[in-house]
Image 1: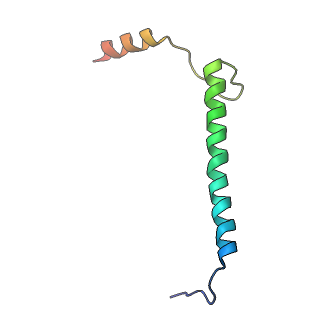
Image 2: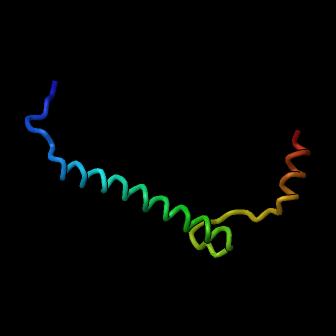
Image 3: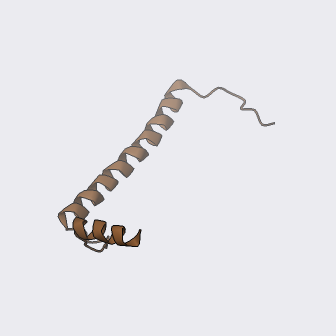
Length: 64
């Protein structure tokens, strides 16, 4: 079984943890940005069909 020869320093551990946290932060920022652009109707890279909410629920009731 592989065993590390030396202990990882606290500063190196903190650096790696901060990098890991920052990746999650930027993923969340991008997701919020995409959600805002879709909601406002300004999305350039994301295509979706526009349906009124009432039409959606009427079609769901018909399928049941």
